[in-house]
Image (cartoon, rainbow, N blue to C red):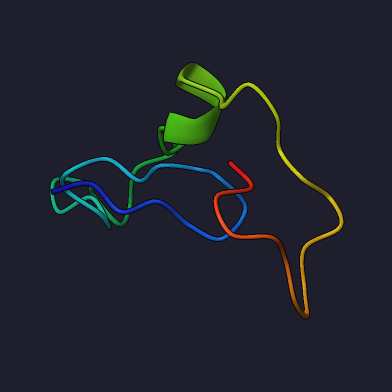
Length: 53
């Protein structure tokens, strides 16, 4: 099951990725850039409204 972080970013099923080669020079895939949420709140921290995402 995917996990939704406090800033509305949803992690993929496999996180962190297990199939990455440590010596590889290719950039790591960034799931939240491939499938961004509609809004990424920047005022997170402290208290926040429930269901802000």
